[in-house]
Image (cartoon, rainbow, N blue to C red):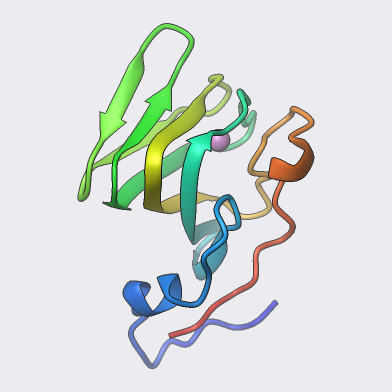
Length: 128
Ligand code: NI
């Protein structure tokens, strides 16, 4: 694992400029046993849950829906929401949306379901 740089700011705009694929998160920081990631999302993700971690979503740009089976939470820029561990959810974005995520390190983005091509590989670490 690449070590994070404790001597400089992590510029989120710069990191977003290094990748353009959707559902392909980049790690930008580790905090204790949690990891901070940036991702671009568009369209529907898959229904899934994470048994061992809460999942924080903070919208940087665009609009994101966090859908539960019985309700939907809508987020705009500067708004965050935490999905509790073990609760089934999916995200939806009509247009491309840029998000920051916080979750336990090693979490599979599609949880316990077979996400097929939506399941991300271990995310590259991007510094600066
Ligand atoms: Ni999730």
